[in-house]
Picture 1 (spheres, rainbow, N blue to C red):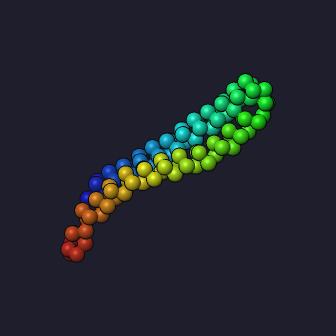
Picture 2 (cartoon, helix red, strand yellow):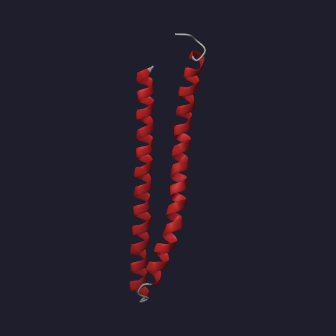
Picture 3 (cartoon, rainbow, N blue to C red):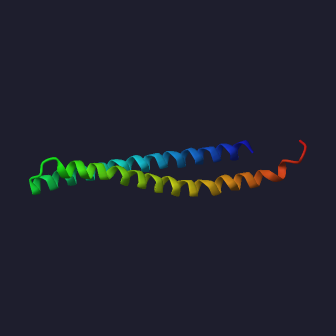
Amino acid sequence: MGQSNDKGQDEFRTAVTMTVVWVAGLTLVVIFAALFAGLWLDKILDSKPLFTIVLVLVSIPVTLFLTFRVVRAATARIQPAIKKDVTEEEPHRGEDS
């Protein structure tokens, strides 16, 4: 029983770590894409900091939205595993050792 609990904790830690990696990666991609797109548009349209500032500011809510979606999807995947572990242990609650 201890090994299955350790395995469940390892799976949980792995899922949390992967979620953090995804969120960090998406954040970097969105911010750098906004930065480079803004710099490129400012160069093309000769409007020095305007598009860079606007796109970087717009990237903040986009990043928050994507973070929410990734965490929500990861949570949906983690919860069934937790519920399964709880239901497997329930029949043993009333038994005396």
